[in-house]
Structures are given as C-alpha cells and as structure tokens.
Image (cartoon, rainbow, N blue to C red):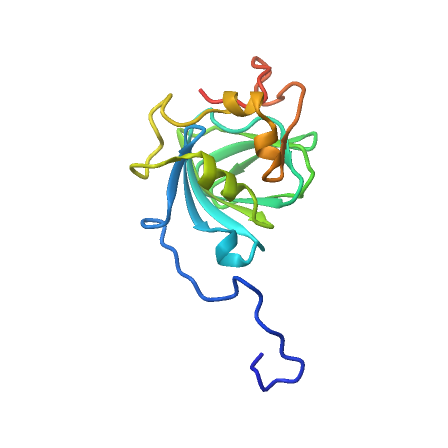
Amino acid sequence: MTANTPNAQTPMSGSELFIHNKDSARAYWWLGTVWIVLADSSDTGGRFSLMEEVAPKGSGPGPHKHTWSDETYYIIDGEITFLVGDEIKTARTGDYVMVPRNTRHAFRVESDTVRFLNDYTRASLEAYVVEWAMPAPERVVPPAGVSPTMEFLATNPELLSRYGMDLLPGPDPLRPENERLLHRH
C-alpha cells in the first residue's frame, strides 16, 4: 500500500528492509552449537527471529516448551530426530518442521553435524542467545566444553522463562539412558 491508498496503515516497527549475511551476522557458541542470528526482535518489530545453527551428533535440547512462540526448523543439511508432544519423528535435508507454542518438544542430532534454520514467531529465544551465549570467535561447532552448557540452566530455569521457554521435568524419550533435562555429548 502507498500513502495515497485509502486505509493505508503506518508501517509496524521493524518493517524496514534489512539484509544480514550468515558470514557477517552475529554468531554465538551455546550448547555445543554455533548460532548465527540472521534476524532478531529489533529487526522485525518482535514478530519473528531467525537463526542458522550448526550442531554436532548427539546434541540437542531435552523436553521443553516455548510459551510465547511457535518454533520452526528447516533442515539445510543433516538429520534430526524430534519429539513433539508424544510423537517421535525424523527430519532430514529439505524437511520443514513446525512446533506450535506450548508444545512439549526435544530433538537429537543423528548425522555427524546438522545445519538448519530455526525460527521463533514471535521473537524470543534469540534474545537469550545474544545475552547469555559466548560470542563465537569462528563460525564452527565449538570444541567440547568451551561453550556454556545446559547444566547451568537446569539449576537456574528462571533465566529461560524470561525468554518464553520452560524446561519440562521427567524422562527424555530421546535419551532414555540419561535423565537430565537437556543433554550435550
């Protein structure tokens, strides 16, 4: 719509053109994964956020839910097993996965590494990554033990709830040998 169009509306905050490149966008190490922030709340007026992630085999969060946001995944390369509600499904290169807000979910990387796009509608978890994760000195999966881990969050769950994410108690069906809420090899 143009300004001369009847009923034209003022653009929403975050409605301006922006271009972020995965090679120059802010990158972080968290949970043994490299997170590249392609769009955050300030870019989109809080409507959504988008990150590219590269994660190693065996990694991924245990059962949790997002109270503010629907979460989507587009698998660029690799394979992930997802728990969504009570269902276990595998997503591979080219697959798109949608997890509605307030839905119990978890995942485990099956391939040697996985590369995927991760979207939150409305923006939320990228703010946690920016505030708490370690700035990545390079855009690779961090060496084991270098990036912040979930053990800290498991003992401080209120940190995640500030960003609309709740850890869920109980067993992790994707890791029956491990009763931790979130897991990283």
